[in-house]
Image 1: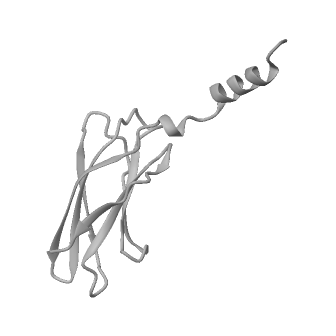
Image 2: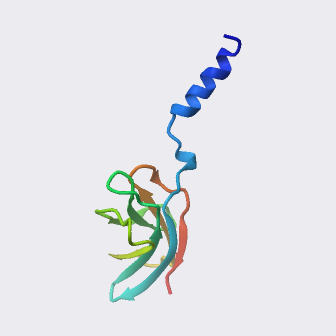
Length: 120
């Protein structure tokens, strides 16, 4: 065998998970509406859900300090409903003027993108 290292690298490339090639959940829109002492957060997500083994399974609301202040669990795939919008009621600490939203996929975990959301 002339190229054992090259063959080993090809084998590893073929058998390792390809998370870099996966499509993370994409936050298409986010809106915050004050409702008394809390905020209703509406988030629209697009993800190539394929079924129960691979779907966008949640999103979270994050304060500017990095503290998670709310999590919306998505309990089933949305294969035929793309993009889709879901809501969450959260309490926001006094003086906070903006939040961040990030989404998660059951198979690939948290997306790297944090979408800013102004509170107006």
